[in-house]
Image 1 (cartoon, rainbow, N blue to C red):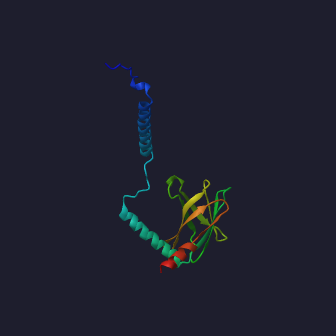
Image 2: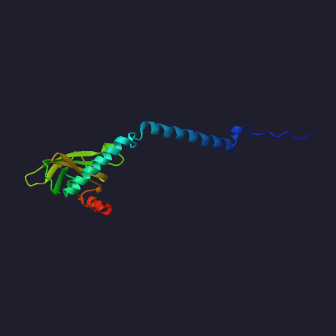
Image 3: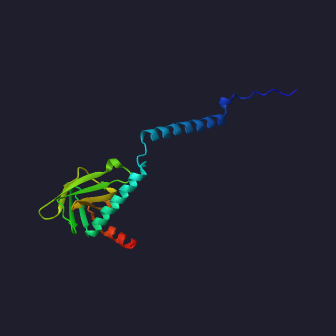
Length: 176
């Protein structure tokens, strides 16, 4: 008759605890990811494709008008005072301009600045806070009731002057 050997209970072995630890960690991480996804919904998806397409056509028409008017702009952001100074060249000189600094991924970091024409011909506005990093820079103005637009992607940094209009014109020449 074989001798009976005492077997240790399961909780005294190492492998069941390793398996339980892996499963518990997986469940905790999954619940954490679900809570993050619920609290921070993705807002970059546009469900209305038709309206977005019409908007693209309007934007292209505005950019074509800016190209026809030979518009170029030089934008300087003063980090200390928050002042925005813009010099516009071309065949348009409206009294006010709108400058939009659009963050590609974080809408709460978008900034809109109204620029007023000064006696010297430049435009001046005020930013409420510091803007840095990659931005879509959009300048809107009007000529004879039609809105024109200069639009480029730029890296905004201290001491950098943003040049709008040069790349757009070169890009349009390559497509012709």
